[in-house]
Image (cartoon, rainbow, N blue to C red; front, top):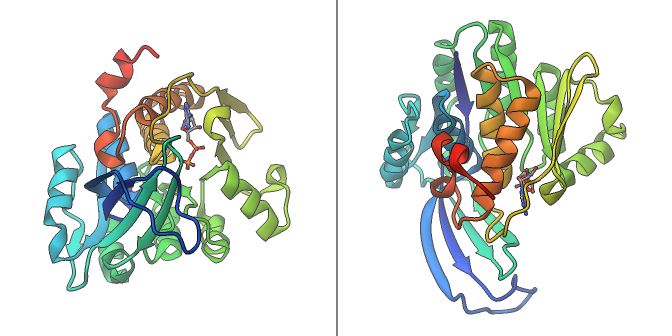
Length: 289
Ligand code: ADP
């Protein structure tokens, strides 16, 4: 089967800083790097590197050809990535000495993607495939509705948190993925305890406290986080989401997919970077923390 990821592609500018800047503070960074990122590109990279057939639906500007080439290099089908006459999305990422991060995002081409492009790309999907989406593009709800009508699994990684987007996409969602902060935000926005949320499957990642999944029949799975030395947690959730999705697409059980995703995410946090730092299935299999 295949994963069709309607997702952002960003150019990430990384700054290593002694601490995250305070309001009004000017801070000298000790290191600068540029890389490929965006929740969409990260999750496509993770799913493809995990070994799932992965198609990326999205957009870049004329400055984004290298980003598309990078995705292609990891085995992502980038045919449905449009090149628009607007700057590519980009992010300013500060990472402090403890590996904590703070991010400023400019959406650019990600939000300018025409609906007709998304619809045409999704028309190639087949029953049983997965539509993966996040909150960094346009047309999530329309895509989710079309995917549901085509018989796809709709996996919604509802980040960055956006209450309006969640309300619109949730009715078409098969699996909702949240981190601990987003889970609290959603619960508050909908005034619903998480356990009462009307969604067939729910995955909550809790950083170093592990990740939990509940299925439509009330079945549950849990994966503790692996004990590793975290140097950069950027992209941990995306690695987890991409691997978990890929695991299910490749026929793993939810528990098995969860454990696999936790191992991949743990390996990611031992490395600097986002998409470039997401490990392959072979690296995950060989990882001994
Ligand atoms: P996000 O990146 O969206 O904030 P989390 O912080 O919940 O997401 O991290 C996602 C997953 O990555 C966790 O469930 C865990 O498996 C793994 N992970 C995150 N931080 C660590 C860590 N410090 N050590 C080991 N695993 C981690």
